Image (cartoon, rainbow, N blue to C red; front, side, top):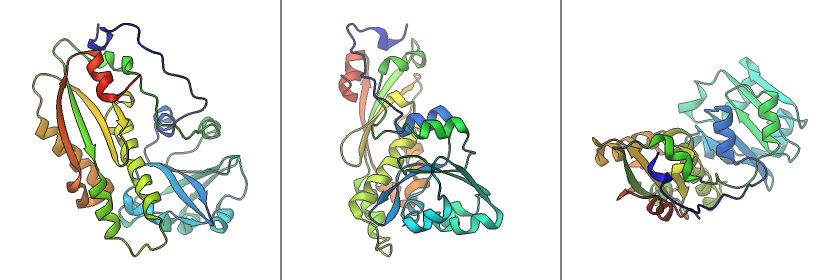
Length: 266
């Protein structure tokens, strides 16, 4: 049995109707997509995965623009070739030239999904049920990863300085609201952790621009290697500003209660 099974009277997570964005990504194996919502006269990204910070800045477009792209709700649109040209403005130079086709869907709540993967009817149906909650952590789901010789390493990350420095260097995008776009970039990083870098139940958001995560590894582990690997991966979001991310190693956990306490799981 896994280490985390050695606990009693574990509380069950409350069930929240609908899907958290990260659960939606995981369920449908989406690699590059974003959810946009109305913000005054524009549509702006609320959640994303696979977007760099420059694309998050670029993706703000007027409601009229999107009315021309996806006028009807509950209809799946696809764009390629010359039809894709108007949508290039949504992406940074690093991303736009690798995109051959884009799928767009507007749900009945007027939220817009843009995806590099084909939007199927199943994906569209689940996008109708997206909620504003983050993934509800269930540490029991980590049990299959834990072996007799496993180590559970605890890390705290803070990316405030990295995001703030990036945004300060890109003030030419004068239309963005600093606090709002800061949150969206933070959401991108969180989504990458729970969907790319780690398992969904090993990471929590920990206040503004911060998160906690545990990594399960064998005896031969290197904290420095993990930290360097995370910085390299997060350069895909923030470029060299990722080097300003503060990553603190917080030791190991050897009991379910220690994991629960660190991740603040009820």
